[in-house]
Each structure stands twice: as C-alpha cells, then as structure tokens.
Image (cartoon, rainbow, N blue to C red):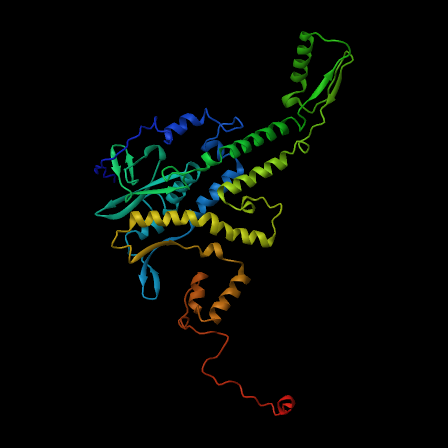
Length: 406
C-alpha cells in the first residue's frame, strides 16, 4: 500500500519543532499564545463556536456531497468516463473504508482551519488505486530552489504528482492562511463572549450587587461578610431570598444582559466569521434580516464566491495527481453543481419549459435532471409548444381592413 521507496534531493529540510509553520509547533504554541482577548484558540476550541462550526461544516460537507466525475472529451461536448481508473476514487470510494466524499471532507476541514490539507494518492503501475487522508502532523513540506514542493512522510519523499495538497489563500505560496491564523482574534472574541454569556446566565443574569453597612467595618469583618454572602447566595444559590442583619442593605447592580449588549456583540461575531469564511450570514442561521429574495441570492453567492474556489482547488489537485499528462488533453475532472442551482418545483418547471422551447433540452434531458427514467421517444429535440411542418393558419377573416383600404 505504501511504496515509500522514492528518493529526492531537496534544498531545504525543516525539523518539526524548529519549523514555525509545522503542526507540532502550532500544537505546542497554540496553548500558550492566545488571541488578543487572552483566549487560546486552536482547532478544538474554534469548532466549539457555533458560527465557526457551521461555516466549516457547511463548506466541507458540501464539497464532500457534490458528485465529482471524470469526463472524456467528445465531439459534441463531454461525457462521463466511468471506465477511467480515476473515476472510482473521485466519485465512489477513495479507499476500502472511506468514500471519496469523506476523504474530501477531512482534507477540506484541515485546509479551512489550518491553511493546508493533504491526501496521498497510492498508485499501482502508474494508475491511481486509492486516496488516503494524511494527518498534517505526518507531512513536512519542503521546497526546491525552483519553488516546487516536496512532501516528506516518514523517511520517504514524494513529489506533487502523488500528494493532494489543498491550500487556503497564501501570502508566500508556501503556507496557507487558515481560519485559525487569519481569524484568531475574531474567534477568540467569540469564545470570550460565549463564556461571558454562560457565566451571566448562570448568575441569573445579575453579575452582582453591593452590601452596605452603617458605620465602618474592619477589613476582617468586610472579608468575613463577603465570604458569608457568597457562600449563601452565590453560585447555585443565586436567586434565593437574602437575609441580612446589623442594619446591612443589599443593592443589586442595575446591569442586565440587554444593557451589556451581549446579543448585539455576538451577532457581530457571527458576521465576522461569515466574512472570514465567505459563507453568507443567512446560511449561518442568522436570519434577522433575511428575506426570500436575499436568501436566494446569498445561496448563489455561496456557490460563486465561497465554494467554487475550493472546488477549483480540488479539480486542479485531482488533475495533477490522477491524470497522466497524455490523458489531460482527452479527459477532465469536474464537480456537478446542478443541485445547488435547483430552485423549487415551479421555478425548475419554468426553466425546463424555456430550454425545451428554444430547442436546448430534449424530454429525456429534463427527465435525467429529475432522476426519472428515459422515454423511448424522448430524445427528439423539438419544442412541445409548436407543431413543426404544418402550414400557418389561414386568415379567413373576410372583414375589410378599413385602415389598409384607406
């Protein structure tokens, strides 16, 4: 399965613990170097933020569920090529225990969060037989003087023809700017707001109050009174009936969750995560200002501005690793995004009718898109709304045309 026998001389070698871009370094420093809020941000804590979890899962699962096919160039367009050796590993099963979509999901999550995701293409006789997800900690990326990458896995080194490398946008072309790097402060603030809101709700939405006594208390007496109050009415005991003596008065602080604007601040952080991931805010279930019109447009925006760059990165990686140079002129790899563009039944029927009327679709073309069996006579490219070959209707109106006569 793992023919780690290839040897390549590289110009630069980096140790995991001395390379600040490596997984080990990030794991070591992520717990001690937090965001500007003082909160440590790593993959586990970031995915506990609902908006981050929703955005990352939406992108990764959509990339995983969209069908991906190998196509052969035909005289009148392109046709699926199920006999090609790469077809099964991109459309069906990537290996014996994972589907093609599952491997895409795992690699995409790594790329979104960390900036780089990796997969290994195992080949037999030059033909791809399986694709395996590679843990980022097992891959060290090294670069030749020309900028071409080499991938060290254990003691073996592989070229870009066997490693699927999905990379987020990068400043230097070597290390992708993942969400944990570019959005560290925004995620840290979201975590802090989540923790603050939790503590606020635990204390019955009242952060505290003031105990006042007549006369002057010694430091020891004030400390003892505070400890006694917290022991009786703090934590799980909040919200109970307070009993004070010695002319003491309790004045609650007029400070509520509404006045502290926690809801507004958390809504802003959802928008920040939307900007960082390019997932429309309505698709993160923030429907405060969502309407039928803008939700439909933002769904299209999700495909065009957010999803297509990831799909293009995958098709480029598939082309580089799965298609031999001789095959690239006659074959291509592409995702089928029709399901993302499907409207409701009425909208689809109207679109199909226009395609049929203009002679672009046959009846079987429509039925294939609706997952219906073909009809025996459904391949005729004719409009169902006209009857070709018939003469125009005769004008039997014998009424004189007064305007023409004039």
